[in-house]
Image (cartoon, rainbow, N blue to C red):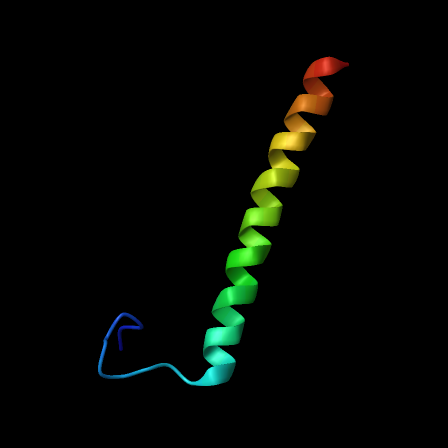
Length: 42
């Protein structure tokens, strides 16, 4: 089962979950960069 199949659109909750995971991963990456900067300035 591939999510990228054009003829098989994922259900709404799955799409919402994917968007939330993408947002969480971006926030986590920004937090990691911020933590690295903070620890580097100390």
